Image (tube, rainbow, N blue to C red; front, top):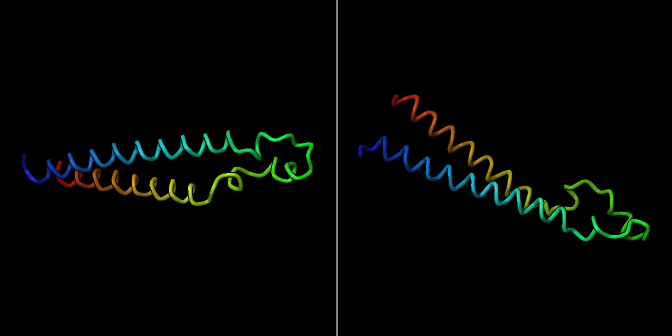
Length: 90
C-alpha cells in the first residue's frame, strides 16, 4: 500500500474514532441535562425555582460544552484533511 493510501486509511480511522467520541459526548451531555436535579425538582420551592428554567448552558458544565466543541472542530479538521488528500490525489 502506498503512502497516500495509508494516509487516507489512517485519516478514515481517526474520523471514525472522532465521530464516536463526539456522539458519546453529545449523549453524555443529553443525559446530564435530563438527570440534573435542578431540572427535576419541584419548581414551587423557592431555591429550586431559581434554576428550574435556566438555559441548558447553565445546567451543563461549560467544560463539557467546550470539550464537545473542540472534538467537533477536530472532526471537521480531519474531514477537511481527508477531502484535500482525495482531491489532490484523485
